[in-house]
Image 1 (cartoon, helix red, strand yellow):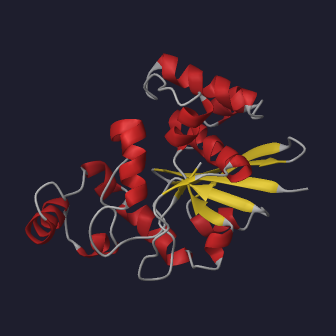
Image 2 (tube, one colour):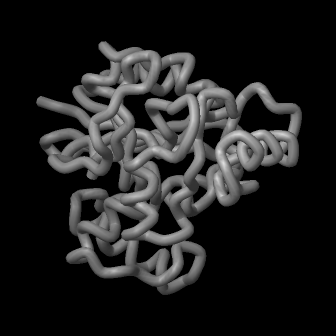
Length: 221
């Protein structure tokens, strides 16, 4: 019986959703990603960039942004961790790579989680631990039609309905159980979407280029 793990970050750490081939499901959370990756699984997917270029934007991010808009943050690079602050990073990127090659505040705020994943991942581990994007999952499972904003009541209802159809029948109860954990509503919903990708994904965005560490830079859905 195969099991599939979806992972998403939240301010205190990481949240995981698990579903198996018999429909058994659960969610968990931890401050460190390694603890959640110790949960037995056959494939895992995470909403964090895997495979980081030395410069420029990844093709999978550009392709995803064309489909999804600003919910996709472009510009993750391996030297992102070396800058003292966001202005310093953007001064460097604009000077050495050109106008418009900077990064957003949202991506900058994810840098510690990107680093945590980058320190764990290897080419061998990437066989079963892959990158996805929750909004790409929802878009593709909605006949490639846009949903209402994820922060809106209507948008959350749409995403919950999609997850229920795809097998996460306890999602509404889980959204109540998360209170006191620090897990946001969207974080848990996104982790479930990543688990669906781990179970069902057969396609990927990106040009299959490898980064300097031999990691594919692709987004699976």
